[in-house]
Image (tube, rainbow, N blue to C red; front, side, top):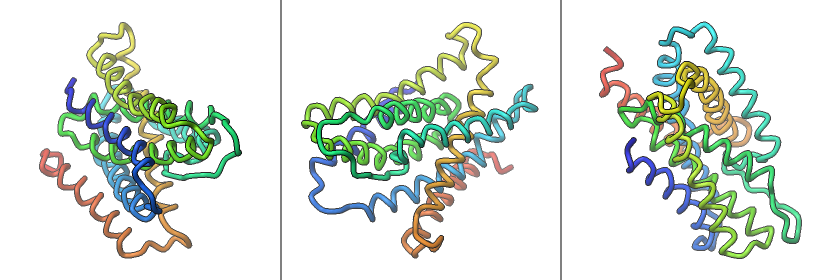
Length: 241
C-alpha cells in the first residue's frame, strides 16, 4: 500500500467539502468542468484498464454478470443519494434533518470506488477518483449546510466521507494479497461490481453535463483532456504494444 494514495483520496474529498465555507459565489460551472473531466477519465480508464484486467482471470465467463450487478447497484444507491456523487445539489427540508440515505449510499459508493486502486500500479485511477470526489463532497456539505448543520457537524461528516475511499483501497489490498482469509477468489467478481458502478457514474456524468445533449467547447475540451490523459497513461505503461 502507498500512503500518498491515502492522502490524495482523503484530502481531495476533505478540501472539496470544506470549500463550502470559503465559496461565496456560485462555482457550479467550475464543478461541472471538473465533473466532465473526471467522468471522461474514469470511463476511459474503465474501458482501457479495469475491464481487460477483470477478464484476464479464470472466472472471466461470470464477470459480465457482476458488471451488470454493479451497474444496477449504482442505480439503486442513487435512489437514496439523489445524485450527490455527480455533484448534484438539492434543496432539502427546513430544519435540522439528517439525510441518512444520502450519507450511507455516498459512503458505500466511495468505499467501492477505492477498491480498484489495489491493482493500479501505474497510478492511472487515483487522480480520476480523487477529482470525482471533490464535487461530491462539496454537494454533500452544501446539503448539510442547507439543513442548518453547524460547521463542526459538517466537517465531521465530510471527514467520514473522505475516509471511505482510502478504506476501500485498504480493504481491497488486504483482499488481493490474501490477508483477508478465503476472499481472494472473489476479487475479480468484486472488481466487476466496481466496473459496473464506474460505467454508470461516468456515463451519467457525461450525459448530464449539459442540456439537450449539447456540450459546449469548454466541456468538450474537459472531456477530450480526460480521455487524452487516460490514453497517454495507457500507452506509456506499455499496454498498447
